[in-house]
Image 1 (cartoon, rainbow, N blue to C red):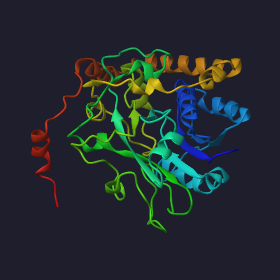
Image 2 (image 1 turned 135 degrees about the vertical axis):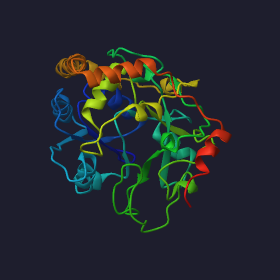
Image 3 (image 1 turned 180 degrees about the vertical axis):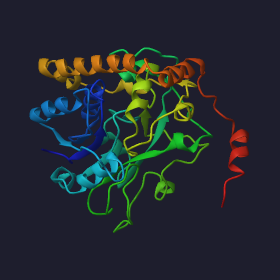
Amino acid sequence: MSGPRILAITCVKNEGAFLLEWLAHHRAVGFTDFLVFSNDCEDGTDAMLDHLAARGGLTHVRNPGPWEEGPQWAALKAAEKHPAFRAADWVMVLDVDEFVNIHTGDRTLAALMAAAPGVDAFAMTWRMFGNAGVVAFDDRPVTQTFTRAAPRVLHWPWRALMVKTLFRNDGRFRKLGVHRPRGAAERPVVWNDPGLAERLFSEPGRDHYGLVQLNHYALGAMESYIVKCDRGRANRAAASFDMSYWCDRNFCDETDDSILALNLGTSLAELRADAALMALHRAAVDWRHTRFQSLMAEEPWRALFGRLLMTPPARSLTADQAALIRRYRRG
């Protein structure tokens, strides 16, 4: 293989309906290897990953519970010992609802690195893509369905401006982290934004999307969000999602379809041409529809669905309004 080996590490549970688009996109972006941990899947995601692993270019590791610190931290600890991690020149921890969106050259990682030579760690700021009133879950690309996003300059909340980090895997950092590698660097590190060397989120009130952004489709359709709430969070074994998570991320201020400019080439077509793989994909889609219908038989889930239908998109705060909140911050 010519060029650097660039590894994406992800942890999934019941994401089979979205897996192929995510994988095709990130192969087109320039990731060469994928290390995927599956957690007690019910929709056949684990079977899809086994099939993809047999095709090559992806490694699947089952990560069954129980977990002391949650499934994602257990996966990252296992990843640090995996040959795929040790062989990688660059590494990034991603979720399946996060899509790298590069704004330079041919929109690949090679173009990003060429535009910022000498950088050892690229902290990519989330740009939240809201629900935009989409109720029903349909089997169509997430990146085409959800194009309404947070404003380029967001003043609040800080948790909507968190980062994920693509970093040079040459021993500069000691441990993997969800948002950035952990542990003091063993040698100097050049960051794309020096202010993020010790932070998990970008500074509110600034535009952080010049060269690259991380499109975060955290909500999806309302029906799909109900199923996501039932699944729980990857880094907390017992915690679930709720209306606070929804309100902190449901920004629909601006249209941003820039991610569609990436040339996927034959990446997605090759996956869709695999009949066995597509059968597993369709089964995952059917499972998601069935699971939603099952949850609607229970009043707490019907109540949550009703709140989603009643709640408008999040209103972006002005700088002065955000300052009213930050004035009470300690320190």
